[in-house]
Length: 184
Image 1 (tube, rainbow, N blue to C red):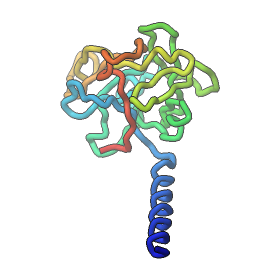
Image 2: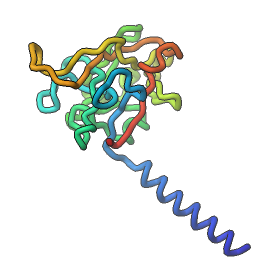
Image 3: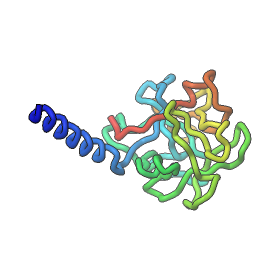
Image 4: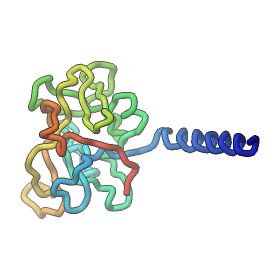
């Protein structure tokens, strides 16, 4: 019985260590759980423009996750601890997602990180991300996609969608369920 008890305690200790390692801060991407029409990878929360020339004034978008290339990119990488704390921060530029409004259709932009209701989000167990001040609204990928690449081409196989707030609901689950991952 004593060996069994010690074995259980060792297993619990190992599991606790593994869980604490798993829960420590690491770079992650915030991706749409349903790939919808993504031919390369799911959609990620993304800045507008390429990773080397981010258009930080433009609203955030849903864009093909670049992790299929083997690593996270500057325009999609976030800190897992920030997300747990309710902050969606693009770490490479140290800017946070902020609401442009509090009605359906409002966009989300990057701004200097600060404490306030317009930058506080909750990643729910069902994958929805809602502003804590407006829990009836969820980050929602747009219903249509377009091919990536610079304006006027050449286009590539990356796809993009708008990102805005819409009422949370089961009918939009494929556009509103998000998760985090280290990459593929």
